[in-house]
Length: 499
Image 1 (cartoon, helix red, strand yellow):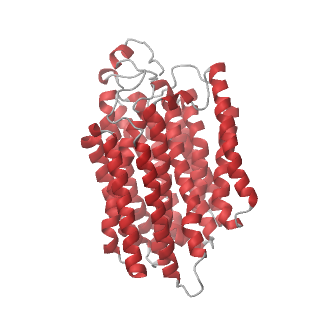
Image 2 (cartoon, one colour):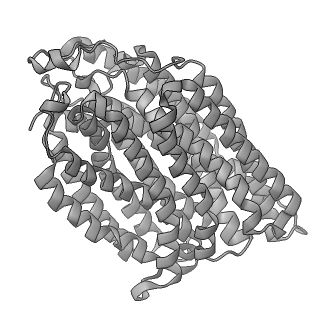
Image 3 (cartoon, rainbow, N blue to C red):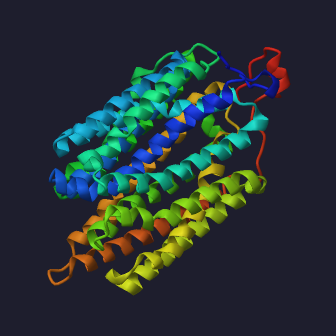
């Protein structure tokens, strides 16, 4: 099935709900793969003698490859078929996960993680874009609610499953089992994806944009590689030169995309999307929120296991209030609070910031003596705030996007998310590791980790303050998609009009 135009409920593919289960499973695996790896990092460090920088790269390498490839992945789906690219992506992701599970040294593990991120960049954009063109407008609120629930479920399951597999040393595999778990899931996704997912492409003929791909990839690499490796190398001058040069490359990318759009209408990034207020503002918010989440996920896990000496299972159980609160708030935000527009997102930013500030104050007060019960309230508050942001934000960013640009928009959303996470992982060098390295000789490791953790939490609060201000640029209330005709007219065969 090819669905380039909006669909009404009566004309939608009857397989769409079963296909949605496959698509959401792929999203679940992606989320689990991020959170499950964080919980195993201290074990990986001991088992294969990985340095702190190598641990950063295990996460950042995935996020970097994901961010670099996502825009291209979305466009490939538009051109060659979203189902086809999704299946290629999930197949490659399964192979890369297996390579991660058998890696014997940090270098091989990082390389396999980069490959895993590149394959995820093919798989993930097709999820939102396929949902966007498969489900009629009246069903999308429910679908995005399910999407948010799956994201929250992944946040719950990831740490717990990772902890059980690692600490339980299932089949003697230790941390390797968390990667090999993707093998049966990926194979099942391939089989059912081929049977249930309908094919869809962009309604007009598009071409690949190799120059745009090179410019976008170069700009992202010039920004993220120095940010991630700078601390390890002592912040050499070339690292700052590369980061500054990345903005020049991005400017060149924008100019080229404008020319490409006028020439053949097939740019890698549809710049007209940024004329849509909700999309432009939502992308900025996505970047800020993902960045603070990237910081928190890294430093919280290291603080608990290396600073406080928690086992993987104890760490996973300690984080459960955050994950459950995220899932519950995400469903509530989509099903009950969505009509309130940007107020829900602003409330989420303030609640999440309040949770981070409370956590910082408690960590400062209790020091290395802080226990799991003292973390329940701040973690739950942070999770509630996160849930109020993630699902409504996805809907806000996509709400006014024309159907023919669904793949490009989805790629940009996911690219921004992963770029923010990668920036957060890179900034953890400044917020966490620099403080850790600067601890005096008489400071105990537990105290040094605690001080670094508290410093990182205040960065989280600051980043959420920026997100709150950006939310003021969103429409006060939800608005109908810009430049689209009603679904009934689309059924008659007319293509939707671009904004």
